[in-house]
Image (tube, rainbow, N blue to C red; front, side, top):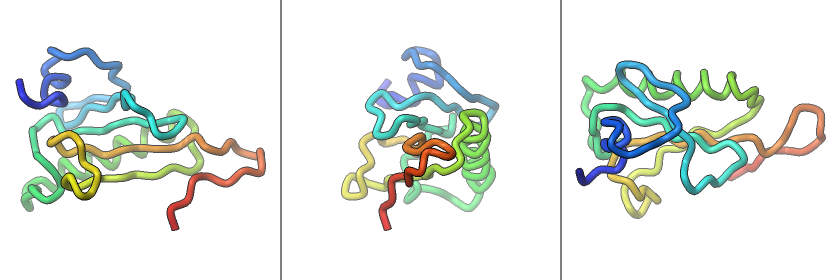
Length: 117
């Protein structure tokens, strides 16, 4: 098994799954970059956004909708959704995945979340 995320999908590698359906799986990142950092992956091995085909649109929609549901469950009022594409784009696992990042600020605390621009 070369792909760690495929190993997680096959239950050969343990992970704390926070969301799953027939198309996607989501679990906490093992090296979190935010108080809440969840990785959402397609169960089908797709290397990256650069390898998407037109027939993958339902998978991408499922990934984004899962991130929205998880953010709501975790009561995140603000969050980021990030796809890293290719090594130069910061992708470290060759299996398409979305990072859900949030939890920097809490409602009413006067703090702003992390901003990239």
